[in-house]
Image (cartoon, rainbow, N blue to C red; front, side, top):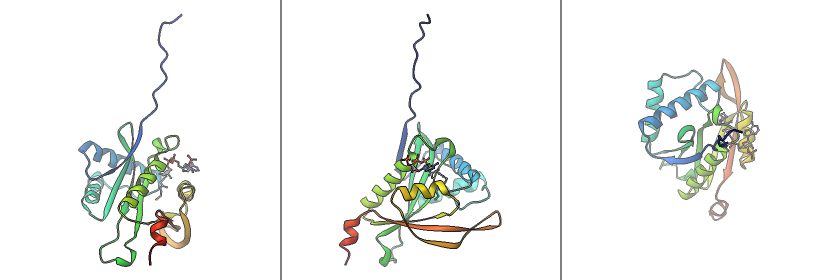
Length: 191
Ligand SMILES: CC(C)(COP(=O)(O)OP(=O)(O)OC[C@H]1O[C@@H](n2cnc3c(N)ncnc32)[C@H](O)[C@@H]1OP(=O)(O)O)[C@@H](O)C(=O)NCCC(=O)NCCS
């Protein structure tokens, strides 16, 4: 009989966070994740993969912009997903209660089973609430079935479809527009 101890593989550690700075290694991981997300065909405006310099500058720019809040998901410490909130500009007093969710994805190797997208979106919603926002808006290509199921499962309400939303491989794709009231009390109290 073998005296080897049978050890069960440890469960991966799935974490999410709001970030205001990233180490060099994190930035590399985020660029790699973006690369994979673009190749997998979803969750980003890029259709053709940008060079690594452009990706690097893009993420540094996001961190530098006061109107963007950046969130990352990690599996065992490695960044494998992200989301951003765009806050309204100061002059937009009429929509000062609403933020827009954008560039939200989890890389294919980290999808399903870890619940990372759900955790990430919950983090985003909590942060938005903490910052005093009551509504999250988002839009998604009609072709991204998983994302559509995900957002609808998370309580996002489809209120319209844009017939000329995006062009991918020379084909026009429709876009679905959603909102979610994340602070119903605040909305009800609005004059
Ligand atoms: C959509 C996406 C973010 C989901 O990531 P994920 O980490 O696998 O999702 P989770 O494991 O947290 O699942 C959350 C919920 O999403 C839904 N979902 C996830 N994968 C699904 C699938 N393949 N089919 C149907 N529903 C699915 C389920 O409702 C799930 O809830 P459940 O676990 O209680 O069943 C990911 O597939 C992705 O990045 N896709 C490509 C990019 C994209 O579409 N981004 C959004 C556009 S802005």
